[in-house]
Image (cartoon, rainbow, N blue to C red; front, side, top):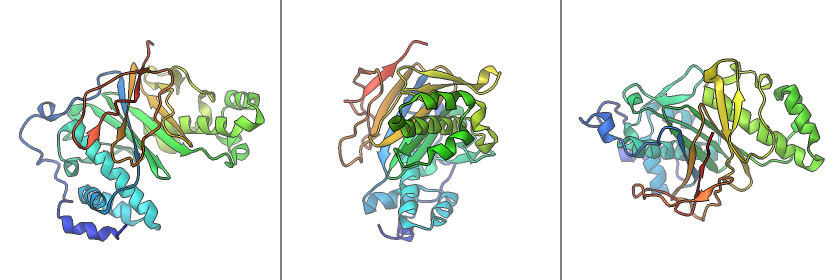
Length: 300
């Protein structure tokens, strides 16, 4: 991959939050997720040189500065691709060009759509690890997503007493020894997704709430406090081999639709536990519903 400065030739990296047209936002948006519905997109963080330059050209000045702060070129390139795909997906849902997507950030760094786009009701979250990324989108409902490599060499024995509640530690002890590392990683990833969904960062004590450590067949509620708004639902999805991931939704999820970024060079093994096969409409040329992917629907 060439140095990122080569993308400066594009001349399209100037984000303008107000120049996306004269139609009301509601008239410009594509079909957003329905209420109670979550759309998930998976992607690999590789791209051709031309596509890489397009991604870089769509970034804001702040995102470019963030990219340039990475020491290793591989990490820098993956960040650029991950953000570029996010912008294309958001642009698809909002009916605007990727470079016209503008963000604001919460106190702990969680990205949201800027005020000029917030009336769409579109909420999102993203996570990437190694060369894979996941994106979650919902309508007027906060979501959190996390992906971690399946690392059985993880020092879970040292970490579990720090991040797990008493109930979680007791549940972990019930797993066979050969399954403990993966069970820990499932719990860790679910907690990370909850923290990201809430947008509260390290101010949320990880061992102050319980998550299930086993494989999920149906959405599982997690109560972070006595407030009704602090009930989140973990959804049973496991989309990529050799990774553990978690999706959490602030409100009862009725359906999760899985999609993939069409730049994947090989077929994606993307499954949703307990799901039924469905066929959906095509998206735009660069974004395509995977017609072989299942759709999970629950009654809660």
